[in-house]
Image (cartoon, rainbow, N blue to C red; front, top):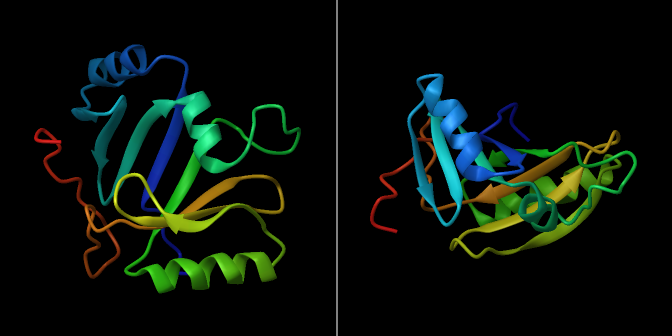
Length: 144
């Protein structure tokens, strides 16, 4: 697994309120399906409902060591790479909370928690292509 974070998703109580907060700080986001994407250098900051994020990650807020209301994502170039990283994480002691599979957004992803319960999504998302340096650029989401 390369040392890279592609997206940080924050699970928020109210997406509209959270978006307004970040926009008051001068950030500019795009919203699609109750999810807001902000370009933050070579990564993305994403706002999504906390309950939806926990469900997508295969964890619950009630897990004592786990869900802190955010998920780190590591995007890779292929479905095979997703499988390889998830397997490597599991061999290292991670708990797979969502096995790799096709996603609702047309990609392929799996989720694990590290030894301290931090949530990682490993994803291949053709809609967010990777640059050679591993950075991502959020595409224009206005037509989705």
